[in-house]
Length: 331
View (tube, rainbow, N blue to C red):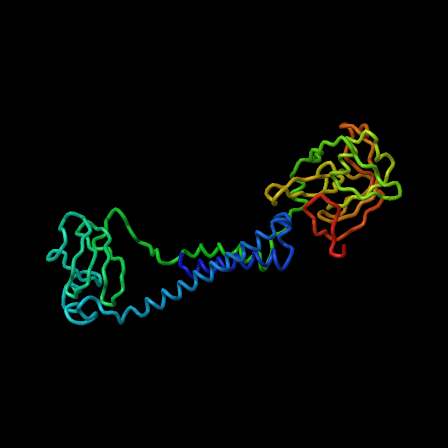
């Protein structure tokens, strides 16, 4: 792949990382908030590498364009014996006399020889191996003297294949169209059971004056199944999450997707909702209700489910991929 293509991909990827992590909060769709400094640093490094790579390519281009004025050895390039020697005898712009100078014939070994212009060459005999030479422009290049029939170089290695430009699409997507966040589709293909609750032996008393009590989905599940004091009995709670359709059995779930590190290791927490029609999938809601009595409250037999009293649409919180109380722009 050419350096210009490499530089373009590095610059696009770096700009996409900085756009999603430094200028916006799009990165929270894919990784936890604590990884932001690493994303910013990665974006800066990629842009720096792209700039350095591009500068090196421009310098090399200038050096190559000035190669036509070079003199090789004691002869003048493009003059003298080069125009009258072995160049016209089937050699592709490379005049070498391996038979008359310091070369080994018919051995296949690489040797140093000097042609009519006084330029040194690396040449090989009739084995079809590559050799280094200087043509009449004074530029170094690789010539293939007698191609090996068993190895066909019918393609140009100096140009990147067109399909390589597809590598630019992920980088452009971060700038133009960010990939969608995980939502109801992912949650609906996860287990219909709630994530295993964290084992707890002690729970703080719920505030008596607060109604409804704001809880996380995991906190609600833990209290329903592990609180021996059964503190959720007849208590109204407020939960937040997005809607996941219930599938063939109908109904719907209030859902949160939790990142341990990034989207690849996400876990789904879903609570079954009763007493309300299913809103559209992926709708973020604040739901008020009471525990739906299935099993024995405070034991493992208790289902993590809610009888819905009220639903209120809300904007997706900033911390959408944690199971914390929601944070919004205004909070």
